[in-house]
Length: 170
Image (cartoon, rainbow, N blue to C red; front, side):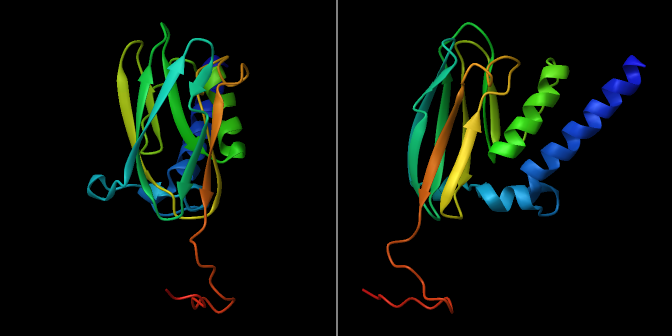
């Protein structure tokens, strides 16, 4: 029975991960909602995010522009493993439930980085749509303790008309 439950949990995680990292697996909705893996040569700026054992991200409120590619340098200044995972709030909650049942599960996608205590990792991400992109630590107990944040993505300075043509050329 335990093996069956583990297989069901693994299947659920794979489905959640496919939705979260859809661009690398054939293009699903999850990635469209939060952006796509960025290209290092197109990084416009670097944002340092520090993860602490107080179950917080410093910074937890980040601003980005639509189309911008950001390099997140993610530092773990705590004594336990932390991670930063970009996603929709729904995807993050679903992935977290699977992680609680399988705490030792290792995973790696472009929208996330797991960082050992005292180490640093990075995510390069392009924000393709205006709106909000959530991020969280999905290590068991961390999300429930409030280890989450948001990237607010602002649209372009000139709003397109309904037909997609720019009405305010400079």
